[in-house]
Length: 223
Image 1: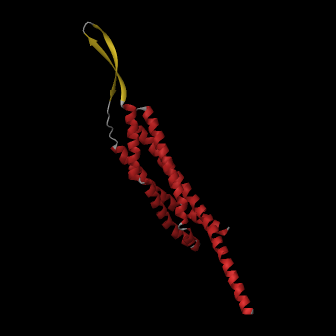
Image 2: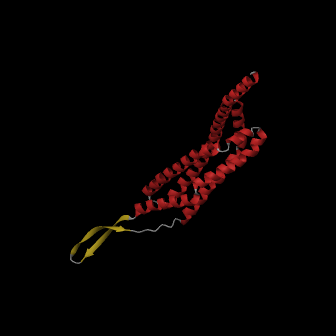
Image 3: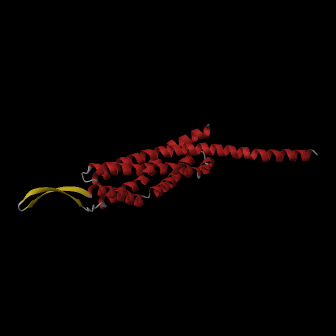
């Protein structure tokens, strides 16, 4: 009878204790995920800010050909797209981190984290590079900018003075459709290179600040 009672108590304890342990692990994992996500997101913010400033400084000025309205329209269009890209990168960080956080929880000493985090940095920067998709994105942005330039330059008014024999001269305003083909190959290559650089910049920044990430994780685990 005593043995049966002890077995019953043991089973009862095991059944109800296991979920508590699992729930605690999930809570710690969630906190660590948020901590590491914040680390990555801050770096992504700064890298994308630098890239956006470079792009918005060069592409609109280069492609607008002195047309102020076209330049402003290109800036608005590109700024909107770059902000959307930034938002997409930030939204992807937490899910990417959460897939590896359990392994980091197991290896929770400083030396191991310093060795493991660069691997995670490489994985995350690669996935972010796929989201950026430099080749396709640069082609889309330049095509949109070219369309804006075309829209702002295709209708121009030219004033001509027309002489006819035995009649007063006439001033005619002639609207001509000027199909200007703008060669944006240089801008396309430049933009592709600059967007491709974002992935390598992210990896460099992640690795340069890996010690900060380790300290944040250790502080979180100590709480």
